Amino acid sequence: MPALRVFYVKKMVVFSKTNQASRKNNHYAEIKLNARAVSRGVAIGKVICLHGRKRQFYRIELNDSQIERELRRFRAAVRLAQSQIKKISANKSEIKAGIFAAHLLILEDKSLLAKIQNNIAEQKVNAEWAVKVVTDTYISNYKTIADEHLRERYIDLEDIADRLLTALGGGGKSNIPMSENSIIVAKDVKPSTLIELTESNPKAIITEKGGWTSHTFILAREMNLPAVTGLKGILRRVQTGDNVIVDGYNGEVILQPNDETYNKYEIAAANFREVNSEEFEAIKGKPKTLDGREITIRANVDLPKGYIRARRFGAEGIGLYRSEFLFNQYKGFPSEQEQIEAYRKIADLVGEDGVRIRTFDLNVEQLADESVEKEQNPALGLRGIRLGLSHHKEFRTQLRALLQASAGNKIDIVLPMISDVSEILLTKEILKQEKNRLRKSKIEIGNPKLGAMIEVPSAVLTIDEIAGEVDFLSLGTNDLVQYLLAVDRDNESVADWFRTLHPAVLRAVKMVLQAAENHEIPAIICGEMAGSPFYAPILVGLGATVLSMNANSILRVRRIISGIAFEEAQEIVKNLEICKTSAEVENLVREIFKEKWSHLFSPDLLPSRKKIRKLEVEN
Ligand code: PEP
Ligand code: MG
Image (cartoon, rainbow, N blue to C red):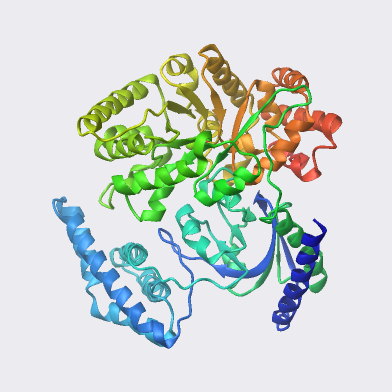
């Protein structure tokens, strides 16, 4: 360990010099902003502003040799967008066809296309940026038109800009990476954008929107990327290139930091890098409570690289593999063969410990082409298992891929968003048919176990029927909290209502664990609750024996489990059962943990009283 420290100190000094040199021109005063911490860690770097609604991008400066290629990329995107519109508008009602005809006219407007191409060539910028700059000007001009009918045309321009940006993302990527030490600032960041940006190795994320359990921040934690959210209007306060510090432990953002602040945070940032260094010694075996109860730790992994880290921290297999993340890699629906390869790759890596692959948990807009009607309420719409059962072709393709990949590999299948046992029975029937077909064609298949995600209240209330038909249960606490409490998990403005320790949630978890025990099948907790040191003792007290979490949480949760007694955890849970509200539960947990286990919890691991009080009536 001492050798490692010297390495980081040296690196720190070099880093410090570069930063101080590059900050010389900075005459602004330091600004400290309070945000909500959603991924731990500290990072120091320079702002890179992300733009775009459907597809996100940032401004890239090109050199002369890159301009011709960029112009070709833009023209290809225009052709793709035009052909999409022609395809979508076929067989549409008169009104809809009229809208698409107007879109096509805009896309054929020579002066608009020329302006965008000139912008690429003269300003030497990427096509995405040129599309934004030019269409923004058109849109603001339209918005000033007095005639209401004409003014509304700006919406068509916004649609066209989105379509062009999406088309630019579908073809050859502008593979010019962002500069080192970039800190992404955006309204929100889509998971697909984050995956696209990983090659450029950003250092942290700052957003206006997004909850703790949103997929973007789940990924950020998996990727070890400090992140904070809840900063309204942040894009108006910063510019690409500004110096910034992100403190993902305390939820702070410091703009234009002064030298004193820099020095303080450089030590914290270096420590963060050290803890996450690849040189960490591997840990083996299950953590045990002080009175001997063993807890299995599995990993939630979406990128194979993530499992390598998780295994070093002692993870035994993958408890949740979100297969829909393949969509980001293949830019659309992955073929049967692509899926087989991806599933085999992850199963090879995991070996005997096995991987539980969840079938696509997408909504209909993500699966189908753009001709599909926008859903008013996608979280309650055609998503998860419902989408699979209504889009048989794609569902069968995935099940066939899973059956083939599981030949010789330990792969289990998990079904998302199950609301009652009928969906399990239907899936079993489809699986049986596909197995027979594959066998008839003499294609080798495995015999994967089948499990249900329990994340919808109706599944909890009918848990006995479901448990009787599956090989295991996977408790998805992110959606379970969302649906039990009717709180959008992605909406930062209702984050104070997203109460993981709501009595209803605790009762639901208990019912599911009890049903699993009665039916003698395993239950695994794989929502973000399992990876929180604050919640883990409660889950253990409720009877959980398998927790699945992202790699970054494993060491902290292991430490807590090894420091508590199962009996104590059970006792705490008994005391919580009489609490009437989440605030009562949270306060009690906080007090008991402080009294019993203050040596295990650093202050930042306990939610602050301020947060707990937030929903009380103010005098
Ligand atoms: C959950 O809902 O808790 C879960 C694990 O799945 P996801 O976060 O992908 O919805
Ligand atoms: Mg879920």
